[in-house]
Image (cartoon, rainbow, N blue to C red):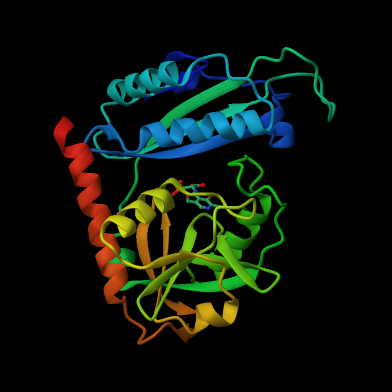
Length: 283
Ligand code: PDD
């Protein structure tokens, strides 16, 4: 198993980061999760662009271009012969004696590796239960930062409640899931939180909104209240690894009739077709 470490391919066992790496000590870094279908990195341009944007937001100056990174990531999946799976990419600010402030000129530590993904087929077909929780995260959720402590705490709580995800609510309004974006359908209109500082603007979210537009389905980027969510006809979540998963139960209460709804299925189908159309050409 090869990994990418600062632009070099090496065996995973050879890759070592320092105990004073700032990602390890402060969560001082950013990351991406990218899906591989058919040996192709899906929506790679968008993921790499967001990676550079997240890094720039926290003033990590990456010492390579987007194109260089893209070709390194392609080399990595070739080296590991991945047809279907995931790629994790991370940059930390670098290594320095532990102090909150950092010296100029640190070398960012950039790692990437591939991992298997089991497509959540059962969840996608039958829907999942979720819980709701207060959104107590910071106010820069638009940055894909390594600081995931609250997300981890709440996802674990959901898991222990036999729920697939927790949907976060800030000031009475639904923001997103701990690792997914959230959508509700009411009277044929799809609602999702606008891409502000309060959510991560998911790459899957952007793809879905594009497909929703192309299909002429009505949608609004508008924050919904928890009540509106509970009374929606359909609810679904999206992410790179989940793709589109219907939510059929929230806090123990059925959404609509308690089965995946028709619009959700149409959105799922549109995404499947898009994935096929942009990855099949390379098989
Ligand atoms: N998480 N919101 C949050 C808080 C997320 O962590 C994620 C993704 C998303 C969906 O983004 P995208 O469609 O670009 O995957 C929304 C990844 C998959 C993770 O942390 O594993």
